[in-house]
Image (tube, rainbow, N blue to C red; front, side):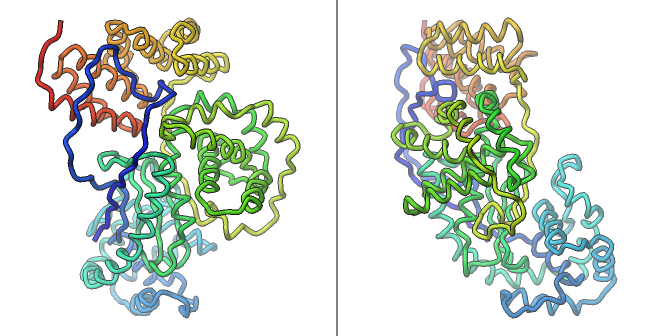
Length: 531
């Protein structure tokens, strides 16, 4: 039984000072009527069991995984089923054991990681077909090519489906116990970031209860899907769950604004030399910055004394996570503002002073790598990232990036003339640059020039120049175009554009919320053409 977490009510205003992300209304538009009251929808955050993961782990135990490990401290279900699986007989069991022997690696953790990935990416019983295209699969799953058919035969031969159904009361009790602590984590983190969750988005955060995996917590990120595999409810690792959930909330922000981030890259290049920095973060600035943001927010949410907090910041510095400290300081200004983090993010990044931080980094002595991993470090708990490549339309040109950044800042200052000069500077060199065109659309809105705004956003939403490679621009362009049509009294066209915004894959959550709210309002209006 899946347990979905209900959306909490957050009394947070999203009036943004960063207009490039937030809603911008046409002059003279009538206030939208209030949306009808309705029950809060469920979110895309779930706590559940997985038949595919259960079957995968049964097969792994039957094959002899950890057969020589003492079960003294194991979950009772895990200990009992290992004994049962080891005595299974049949052609399909023999095939599982032969496959396991042919694919086992010396490191038992690496072996387990492969099968956890398989269980997460596997389709439903009885076929267990992998749900991703081959080109998108992690190397761990590619190493188990052919296992789906073997597992399907094992599932049928050993009647694993019946066993799974018989065990549902146990799994449901575990799921129910985990629900409350996870709900508290979701409530606190979304409240701090002022971020509502939307059940209609493609992004998912799933906690899978599987005692057969063992006590180590496994965190996986595959593109838009985040998963944690927990062994049970006896000791929910709150810090690890919160760390993973913060990544789910914050990871998209650096990816949506690479040009805002790029100005700080010289600091990252120094940090990437830190011996203790996770290898996958040494060549991925977006993921690195997200990790630093997560750590900074964690320091805000944890109940630490000033001394403990300073020690944590020092530890992050010496380990290479040097952006944690300036982000943490920047969060103080965020806390006194009104926008959600999704809207405030560009200002948070711009608040990092490169010159000041560069001098501070020069004085940091990075810690050597020759030590055991820190057991208290949430990021060290079997975390595996597999990111789908994010398209970007921002040129690899420091001058163009600086001009785009300046244009956005001028938009936030409501200075359309200065913003226009910056965006035109980019277009002189890159005539089709999508973010610069988008900036000109915002300039037109600030100038109350509806026809010009409609022309620019129309260009970005349809035809050969459409911003199909930039979900942020495409989604918001549909929203702004819809608002213009609504202001003109063309409700049918407005409705089409709001629906198009909702259909943009990978669009920002704030754009989706704005489109949904606009669509509800349009559905309440009577179509009246205005002169």
